[in-house]
Length: 418
Image (cartoon, rainbow, N blue to C red):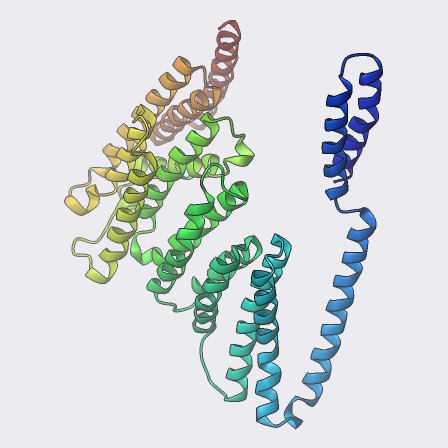
């Protein structure tokens, strides 16, 4: 913030000099000065930020004191008064939300209204459970709280509440929580997430990071170890790789496309494991319907997202390759023969060759390195499977690493000449 203030101040100081030297007309100088002075005035002053910080600390300390007082005298209060005190945070959040919407307040007010309303609902549920001695598990409580947080989440379009929603969703993964609860929680959040993942949407980069964590908790909750986590994981990796590649292709840096590298690494690890052991993608010969529905629903949702996101774009070799990787997860259900090891070897090699070719043709170092990593991973896996000594293996790895470095140097020189 300080750097931006200094930059605007520097521009305002330079404008008269440019006008005096004849490089800038007087009318243009006046318009630019008014524009940048307005932007400078719109920035919050450091004193205001410090005062706001002190105010927040004071509010937290006051609230802590009130909580300690109520805790000390809680059992002395009648039940009606305790219920009223428990409902006060929710009522305060409702009033704050009404004022925010009625007077069209800023995004800061919307964030505060969403957090206060959702927190008030969570406090009321917890206190009513304590007053009436209602027993239950933590995941039951969190599921109810998350459902009640959905209306303020959409009403105020809050980034802070979205982050809290995703964070507390991981509590549904622990314990004996049913998988459908994680699925419902993820589906409730999915429309808001997709709306913010559009290219020109507000806080798009922030929601890209949330999308990764949302997929992680949905995968862990809906598809635990007994529900074939590896298979839906492959499907998710394909979706995130294609989306991340498109973002990078449009000029976004890797920090603004956070899905690409983790998804690619996980997909390569899964294919490498499948190329060495048939048990990685193994499913029971007669899986139960209560297990199968999770895989089919999850994979069908990922394929639907593939279609909705990329149906208007050209189907490149890389996109088709990731669609193929998603479809590979159907093979263990179609046959009992141990063919996944061969399939993963072919997929890893084919994917590496396609990415190497695509990177060379488009002069993309990222795509070229991705293909090199896949080919190197396949070579290393088969190298370690071979019955040769440790010294030969170490020499092979050294040569593989040197070859990787040389390939990058040659590629960079070729790209520079082009």
